Image (cartoon, rainbow, N blue to C red; front, top):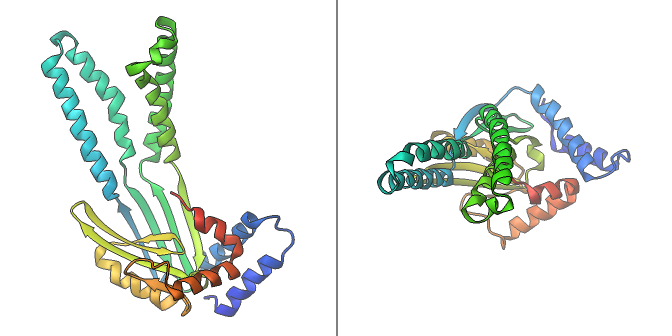
Length: 272
């Protein structure tokens, strides 16, 4: 059973009036929890999964592979034969795990009459976790060995590369996040459709109050029609780019701030 505008208003007003919630974070959790149950119980109007490989990752991966080939070519032609094998093997051990940073992002979507659900995570979490543990041990031994043989000067200049392993560990560990969103159509006031195609691939997505839905190019218009059918008349929808000076956009933001004040902190700081 879908939630009407009146039912949506009753839910948000009850959360705002409930004194057991100490802050906006608790109100937002309660609000999403209610719609999680509603959306899970409803039959899907549309449901799909996809893997998205960010064009920026493709460019970075291309440059990384180019650098790696150039690095090994330099070693092969300009370094003595006795150490070529060792250096190339070391390069594989040190640099190849960084390829895990260039992974696709997986999405799982569900659209119902009341709202939408999006699960978002970066592929390869298990293998990244295993390699992180291995490299944490290797990095620890490398640091201890460097300190015992050279002292703190081991981390000066090019030797600082040893510490780069820890930087890699921190970056990949941060990438193991999972984002899960349940949100009602009645609460969507800002909707932007983006459909970009280029040499590095398609970028087809919808920003609904800054929550991201992605689709294949062939399904883009169908998903856009579903969104337009479900969002409110007061919502600001654009497929030509968000206009900060638009009167309808300003009005939609005012409604959003008034209706869901506990949502605004997350709305302005979403980062994945």
